Image 1 (cartoon, helix red, strand yellow):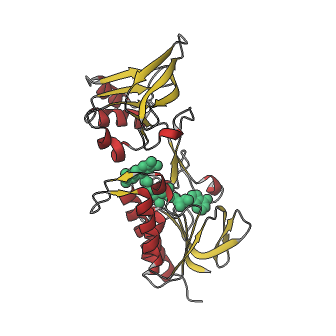
Image 2 (cartoon, rainbow, N blue to C red):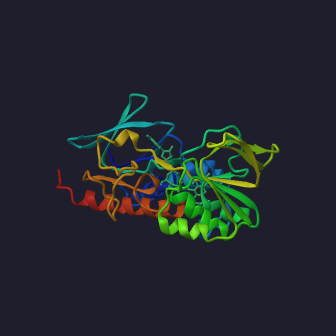
Image 3 (cartoon, rainbow, N blue to C red):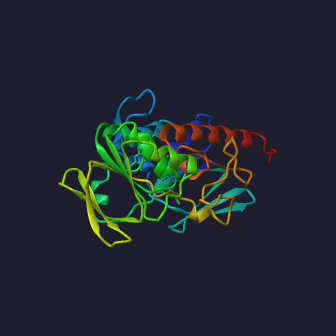
Length: 307
Ligand code: FAD
């Protein structure tokens, strides 16, 4: 068995692997897609001390850093079950194989919920964006839309209104669902238009970049076009934790509940990064969380009774 078995190979998992391996303990890291969400990112400009990099380049760097140590990388494998066994934990993979660890760190990340309309997938990183903290500055002075009127959508619209020339906030429902205080702030801004009962039906582009979107007014049935250069989709971030719901405590959004050490409801199982309740999902935060969970797992291991 591994001393520490890490499930998930994004920034959180890679950081956990480096920290564990540097303690000289047997470290394994299993990932469906090593690199995680970073692989889907074009430009990264907020990883402190790295003013600019690209997703695939950072993903390679994460893997190279882990490979400098004696950590075993098992890539292309999906974990489907976590069980407690006498010697610790067993992780079953979709292939039917299994791995065991005296302790486990879960770092399976999350995925942004998509609108699933024509054009959206084609223009990801070409105007369609999901992270205002990451990509907001790329749209400075431009016209954009934010899809979603919950807290994250309205926060994003307020944040972006300070950078871009104009924001159209589009909500499917009759009303916005964000907190009142955020709605009041949003409505006070001069360069924001709010559309409710509006169903986005298409992202349009010129083959290279987004040029607009099409929405249907759900009351009148009329179809409208909006010309713009960017679309921030803010309709939810879904943690990759469906496979864990019978094993440990998740919140109502499916995020793994952890304490400040990254400990979960099951002693010996730790979690880090976007799959947890930790706020503000970012690369640098995921790396910090992975490092901390790894140190906490080490503390757990050295306190286990000698065999
Ligand atoms: P992830 O990166 O999601 O990695 C999860 C890992 O777990 C992957 O290896 C995945 O394959 C694996 N996995 C999932 N389920 C299983 C399973 N059942 N079994 C095995 N493996 C599994 N953040 C920034 O700081 N700056 C940016 O500029 C930025 N831009 C972004 C742009 C886009 C388009 C997106 C989508 C995100 C962006 N983010 C950015 C957010 C950032 O990518 C995430 O916060 C960060 O990657 C989270 O790291 P993580 O390790 O927790 O999870």
